[in-house]
Length: 196
Figure 1 (cartoon, one colour):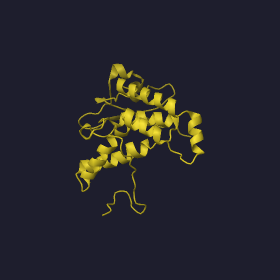
Figure 2: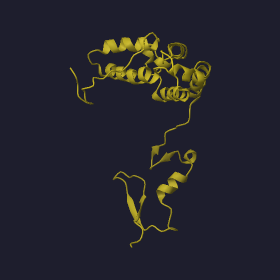
Figure 3: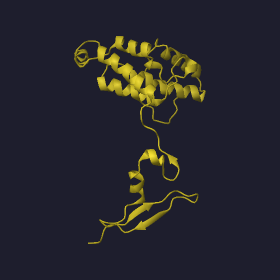
Figure 4: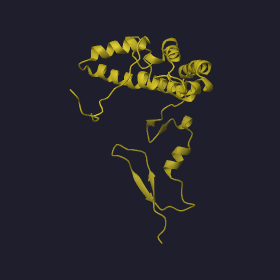
């Protein structure tokens, strides 16, 4: 039986590229540089890998306020018993709750640019909203309408393709909470293939 495999130590990236050094691994062996880097507090290091800044994943004050507002509405209007009862009814989705979230809180237009009447928020805020909708299992079309379909419309608008005027109009209606959209993809289409 052979001994343990060598452990690669990762050194900072230089202009010539990454440098690696081979060192024999032992149970009492040296701590790898990668392990030391992970052990250092992010606040004091502020950077990893020789210059790459670490992303700040803490919630901002605005994201915390959005979370609180959405959670408050969902606790009032989408209690567990109400959501469970809705699954046994003829109308499994909650249009009144969606109207409240979309119009009063503005969740339908989170990703829509401000120039089109939306909030101009990032996907971080959209994720906060998605976390809360998922937490309450609310029967609203948030992911399909306010995220997936909106992202598709934004890509059409950004590319300036045919239909971008219609995409802009739909995004304005989404931001105003007067329209709910769904992304529909032909079953026979493959990703990356353009259907004319």
